[in-house]
Image (cartoon, rainbow, N blue to C red; front, side, top):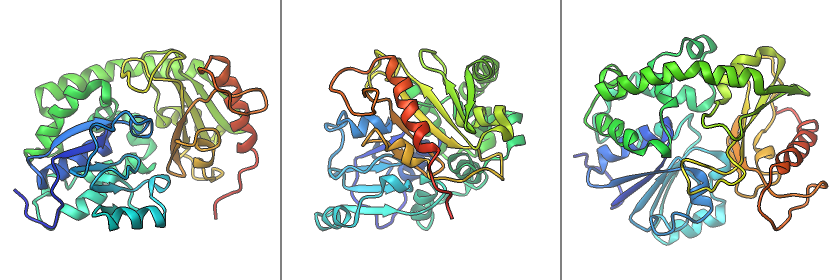
Length: 335
């Protein structure tokens, strides 16, 4: 058991992606008695985790919630403002936000002085790269075991995530991890499913004003920003991927609501560089993420872009896209 200046925590709430998984594993090395709950940003922002988050909870790689006792993250749009941060810390909360390439790196920096994390030496650079847009295009297209592992995660695969979590907490390195029978089985399945995702991206992607728009709504599988930008190459500076279902809900892992993810084309160095989080927050107050990777939910709006009090319908995707494209055309280049 690690001994360090850590708050008393009985629960770790983490994002259900590779970054959140590794961050949770690092924190659980320091807090072995804490349970781990995997979630996604919309569950926090929509209030669906109110009964889960309390002062004995550490939230990592997810939006800030003032009801937790410890907050660990690296997303710019998740960082609480000065007044909110001061109030949180004055009430006894601990805030560890840092501009690192991954939340796992933030957690690693906190825990490494007090716990042996050498088994993560080779895994951490990959987590940093894939979460911050730093993965090499050739490495991505080679579809190695860790690239496939990242596709096998999510709240719909909570049992598998806890299996991988247990391996990492127990000290498995990346080689031992991918050789585990259950992990190897999932990775083989992910390799077989990849071609279907590639075919969907090819048939459902259009480029408008150097923004690649991939329409994956209504489909059971997802497409990552890496997959879309690897497909379009130098023809686009960024992409917008639509996922989910018209009748979806944030609490349904099998049928999420309509949403959009925005990713910079990290494979193309000469791209136009803008703050994509402005697109994610244009219509959705709960949207956000990084300047180069972020997301939001599709909103019910009228033709002018004004919010309407009604359920989201299929036509809202077109209306949202129209607003995003108008803003995209005017976004200033980042210095």
